[in-house]
Image: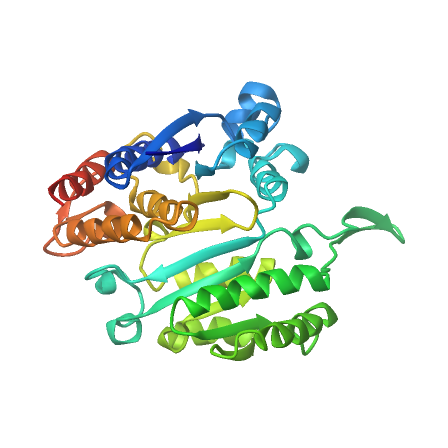
Length: 358
């Protein structure tokens, strides 16, 4: 048996509900692959601020650094929006990513089973689409200095700095190529090199890194065109690598191919451990109502098993169980005619039932 330490940070809103179902799945699958779990739970986000006055307590950060992987539910909500920017729940998440040196975010956008009809796009457009967005996570305009709001010539001016070093671009490009090698060997690098010098450098470095991966077909695309093309013809893409801000936007655009953010997992990697979380937010409007879709969190567990513990078969087992469950059962966000509407807890139980039969 191999022992792995996993920090669980359920977070805010529906985070605890979906995390609970994901942990049930993890505990069911792990023993089959001789994986022994050491689970600990710490607060992060708004709930952490309420308890300690900070969205990322030192105790949580220390536990994250000492773990093999972090499983995070969701952070934020209207309750904490009036807080100073420096202590909002999202700042805790950004600090966690930065301190763990998780510079690469993997966001798959896949149509699971017959969910093709749940998409707002035409079935013939999205059927068979399978896109992986590799987003740079710890640099760019979200972290660049100087930043702030100050008075200039008698009026307030807000400013942020988009900055990328050669080493930052090189390492995220390498991840993009490595992911592409495991998929269809096709990589699209997205930038705005026609107007932004920082992404002109991005394009140059991505092209240089590509020389080390001659089997991968590399193309470049401007971010505005990429947004349009994801909606127009998503099947033209396989793997996409891009900046922090562009990745934030484009991964959500890609997510809508699937019909619901509640279906999409994500992985943040790069340091000695990884962090795994659903793409959806904390959805405080349905918190505690048993309406949340836990499948993105369950699929995030699968990504953790694949990318942190090299258990690809375990991830595939979970994905197959999700697809099988969706043949009959749906939560409200992906409900379709002819399916049975169930809640968060029962959806988790249905996935477990299929896993137990394998």
